[in-house]
Length: 331
Image 1 (cartoon, one colour):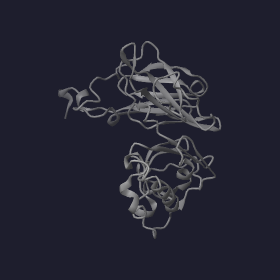
Image 2 (cartoon, rainbow, N blue to C red; image 1 turned 120 degrees about the horizontal axis):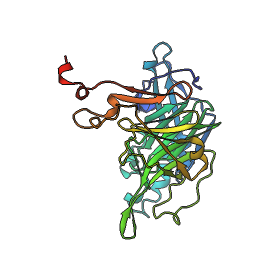
Image 3 (cartoon, rainbow, N blue to C red; image 1 turned 135 degrees about the vertical axis):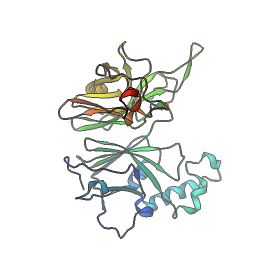
Image 4 (cartoon, one colour; image 1 turned 90 degrees about the vertical axis):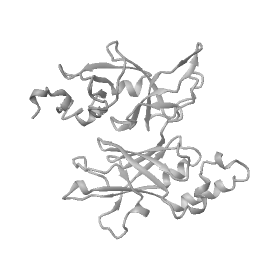
């Protein structure tokens, strides 16, 4: 099943296990059609893990808010992986196994996979995915392209960088291809006796082969299959910048701090260049705010948002909050 581009469906970010959490007599559920599956950097079990995953949807025609998404992992494939790992139990410490020993005897009685919708835009849907029989640190992105009915699974590169919060990736369309982009900071390393870390963009796209090992360029571990890009910020970029909102137009990618302004770059530069030049766009006059994002007012996303509407028009929406209204005007 391929979702038409014109549909608007509201989904709960929590994605239950189809086998363990969904009433099998409930009507309207159908598996999402996948014509092609890809996997990169998912370890020795990557092909099996990618093959084991299925997505299900229940689209309510008259009430889109009731539409639901579910995921499941093939129990036979999971059992085969567990069986292979059990053979190593005598040769390795249990803590070193990629499968948690506590789950060995109960593999048929537990939910095999958990997921969360991170972002859905431009007919691309990104889920964060974890298998309960693997290390809690090992998570994947599952990217579904509704236009091409394809699904890709890649590891989240949290072993080599700190991803700026919120950590959901930016999905990007580039011609017939798609990509995921993360803004991150390398883990600190020693240089000249001082601890140093740098901003990097992590890019994954199915159109590029995995990058070469980067140990000679950086002391941190490789982010394979993610490619790295070095951002070049203009001098007017604020010293502190929050990544509240991220979005794309037909030609540019945007990261917005809803209290200061927007960093943007060309999508072509992201895809084709190591050094990526950014521009900084200030918020409209009178919209800079130092009182949002604190314990008194709450997160900036409660009062503001930004995105790209029809064409390349960027819309910025801001609503009043108590601290912005003079006491005499409060009624």
